[in-house]
Amino acid sequence: MQADAAAGLLGALLVLAQGIAFATLAGLPPQYGLYSAVVPTIVAAVFGSSLHVVSGPTNANSLAIFAAITPLAAAGSPDFISLALAVTVMVGVIQFAVGATRLGRLTDFLSPSVLLGFTGGAATLIACYALPDAFDLPAGGGHGPFREVAYVFEAWRSINPAAAAVAAATLAVTLVARKLLRPAPFMLIGLAAGWLLAECLRWTGVGAPVEVVGPIPIPIPPLTLPIPPLETLPTLIPLAGALAIIALGQSVSIAKTVAQRSGQRIEVNREFIGQGLSNIAGGFFSSYLSCGSLNRSIPNLEAGARTPLAAVMAALILVALVAVASPVLRDIPTAAIAALLLYTAYSLLEVRRFLQIWKISRTEFAVGIVTFVSMLFFAFHVAILAGVAFSLVVFLHRSSHPHIHSLAPDRATEIGRLTPLRELKDAKECPQLKLLRIEGATYFGAAQYVSDRLADLRMRSPTQKRLLVMARSMNFIDVAGAEVWENELVRRRQMGGDLYFHRPRGPVMAFWRQTGFVERLGLDHFFNSKGDAIAGIFKALDPKICQGCQARIFHECGEGSPTSMFDLKAAGGPQGERRVNAPPAPPEDVPPNANSTMKLC
Image 1 (spheres, one colour):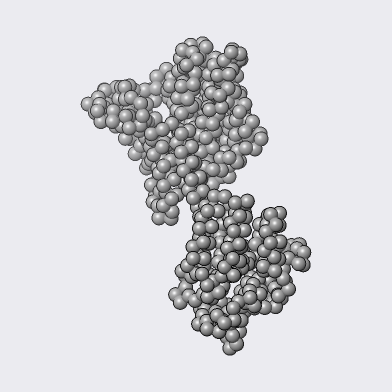
Image 2: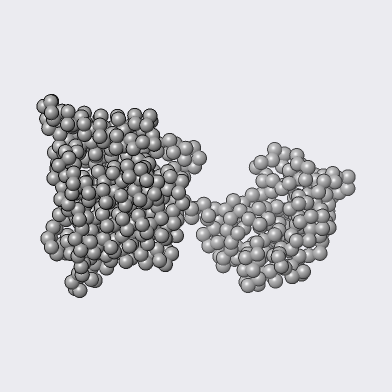
């Protein structure tokens, strides 16, 4: 309870300046930013699934509302306010519908690398936009994070040393308190230190005055009825759909980011329901579009919040603070708040994690970098879509290139386990029988790749007319994939060979039955154990070639070979009685050669 109260107080202090600034950014009167930090925050905390996400007005939503409504009404006008509240309710209905119909699983396409890039990009944006306030620079920096940073260098003569000192003191005390006093509310301690220094400078008259938050209107949300004119509905509905995507993208990204740090499991559909209800309720209480806020959720977690009560208390404390302590709160320096945002950015920018992913997977690193860079140059939702699109491209490339391994018995193992040729120092293959393992789906995206690999094997090893495919890892097949194996069967039989499969999966076998492939290939070409397969296929090999063979890798190649069993356990025991499509399976699905074994010579 105490930890939630301390986190709630910090959240209330953070949203004071942010709410006012974001409302202005959205083209609304300042008090609407504070309204949006009360009712939506409480509803989202009660009905959402995250323990630490704090909802309310955000930078991206404010920009989106401004861009969506300004073509329809003048910013700040009564019509503009009415349309903004109406579209907020419509967005809430869409969000609630997505969660209620359990379509939130679509957000599973946000891979950890996309999430990491989003987090790093958001941290960079937070830092860039907080820098001018940390130095108490006048407005006029322009638009975009790089323009904000450039503005700091261009206007360095206008930097207020007192404000810079307050920001530095706040940041330093926050870092020290985090290290020495955790789990105390170290961010609140840092903010208090910045406020005390600003007061001391004001009393002593040292330096120029430091900009403060200033007078704040009481944020008691009035009840409204956001009914837009009927003629605007055809325009508002697609706008609401686009805004819902932006808000949902932000909410789930922030919820997953916070969950990664807290270890909590997020219920995405419940989170969407909570966000939807918060916007529906918020629209009726003078609140514009809200969603999870990274600027307040991470500080809420870092401040020691344990339950959603922290967000509820933040909303209630905000009302109480503005109503009771307005004379004190108006003296909070904006440089101190900016310093807390810089700390938040520092805690979010996980450079070490980027380096770890670089070592593990270059493609995943590329996904994270694409998302990170997109966050700096494009709108929030565009950056998320860019990261997701790139990660899907990577996935499709991987799935369209299944691993295909040529196999041979490993003579160094007791059971002669089939091993990829590239892993063997002295690999020998049967000159008549090709052993192959395919790992992945043979679907339309991979069909051409698999077909090319099979054709290449036929050309490079023309004497290996017979092909045994270890198909346990071929987990899916479609019409295009079925055609690949149909064509391979025709090619093999045209060259005087044949095609065989070891333990294809049940769904694959069922699909082949539907296409008639099982009947054309023959049930005796499917085997449950590798030993059965070798023994059955060996009878069809050319004995003349066997007589002159120097490989002699199978037990059937001649007497005097070692007596070790070949992967007996995988074959289903000494009798090898498990069937291809078991359980249950018709007896005719597996040929009756269960006692054969395969051994090294």
